[in-house]
Image (cartoon, rainbow, N blue to C red; front, side, top):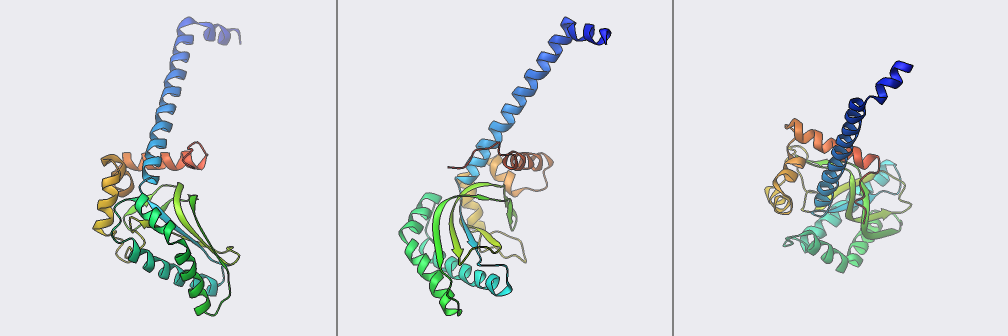
Length: 221
């Protein structure tokens, strides 16, 4: 024990320990700062859709998808010329009652009497992949649609850029949507969400996910 204490008291050992701690602290701060900036930039470039079914029954889940399709069709109609997220959100806010009415009409047409709640805000999303684009977990601006008791499984998507129309069978995002994302992100950030073959980028993506999971990032608005 005495030898251990003498070893710890050694000036050189103290210096190495202090330098190691400072290096660790500096690296941690840089990693958190990087993840925070990237997470914020990605969140600032997309506007998402979150539809929650009344329950997990097959009927309610099927209804959720019909409501989703009609809302997306309307979104595509009114936002076809949008060039940025802010413009898309503004248009959706101006037409929020229309979205609500479309959802209600769809539900009634399908023989149900569920109520619908429409909210535009900043919500937590898990990591999701749309074709060949992956978005890390975090807080994103979104249109949330709650059907009935909203106790069923969720459906998540990106309304702007329009990633909701990805052909799942081919797993390819439309080039126009990619171009919009590229315009709003720097080269590395775009590569981070679109290139799953680069080990370094995969590590950085996982780093963002890890910090989000432990609540280290504060992207919520």
